[in-house]
Length: 211
Image (cartoon, rainbow, N blue to C red; front, side, top):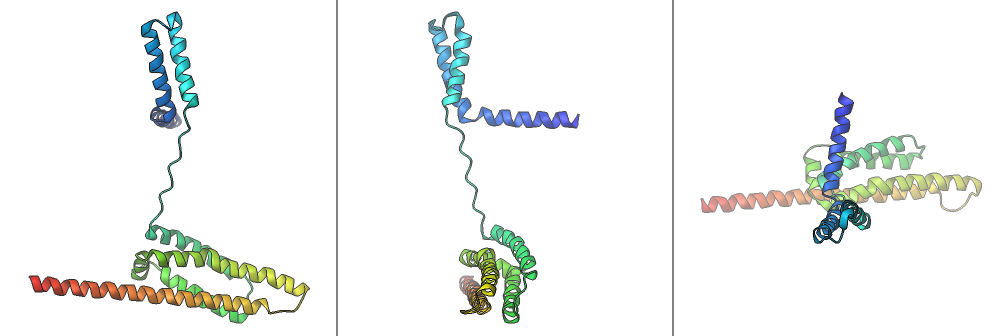
């Protein structure tokens, strides 16, 4: 019985969706035209076939339904998704064998990212700054994985053909640049929060003057 009810609901939902579709609307318009032919006597005794045929032809030539564009999530929604991606990134880098200097820098970087994404007032401030959200998302989703992956690939080739600047030094430099970027992002958030505090102070002062 439960399966039958579920099937009936599914069929009902599909019928309702088709009722408002472009194909049904165009087909219905053609069917109405067929009824007009019936009234004038042009369709003759085969009017049901004419009406059904015109409806089918209209539904066939109608353009398909365009899927609704995905609604872009706001910064707060992006932060929720970023938290999940960051958790996966931490699991990945934990399994990678890195040289000590690079591993220390990566640990500092991941701790800073984690502090920014930790639920609380810091993440609330971050959610109000779309550019900062974008920068942090790019670093977590693209930059850090690319640094680690490139290091692994380059290290493999270096074992075959030694020489040149070491991949370890490149990795440490890349991670240091990302850490500097994260520090600038943190400083921008701190300044944004200070501006909001000053704005609220000014508002309270002006309100007191007019009370």
